[in-house]
Image (tube, rainbow, N blue to C red; front, side, top):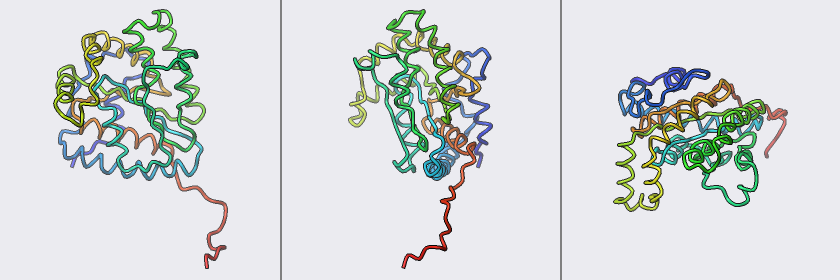
Length: 275
């Protein structure tokens, strides 16, 4: 059995902070970490169990939180990742936020307001299905904000994430890197499989036409916003099994870095007689 160490996964997937980044140089299907899908399934199963236990310890302490950011094109597998990586995790202490087009109330405020409001509270794991990066991705491609405003946002996002990490939030950012051909196959699946049809959105085809623009926007966002306090991990997403296994390794690693233990309640259990 060949299961890569967590540090090896990090080093293989990280967009190194402060260095130039080429998205085209990152494969969308990469068997290097998991050359055997069965090994990936075994790794995922073990990590999911450990993530559940560490999440309970995190919840018991209520001193820190973990934020998992999942960003990717349509069909990249954000919901599938959540379902698989957290398959064994009890709902207590879990928060999931899917970011859609902003409401009128949200548009009346600064663009990070709705994001900050969704950051997990201490003791919880929060998952963002899409995130504040939409404001330098779709907003940029669709010209929903001026180029000057978008340019300012990279530094603003970095400052925002630094503020979070300095206040007890551990951030794990994963870009799910799906290929153009694979996305086409998955979109086609949605039109023929009844349990996936509800996911199909004709607007996804408009985004697909602007694939090159979106890839350019992703490349810039990753390069500008992969920092020491919140680095980006670019995860090959054409293989669902390997994608899930890699992200599970990253999440487990983030939790293990906290060196969690069960808290001392401050009393001696022997002093109590249940009767």
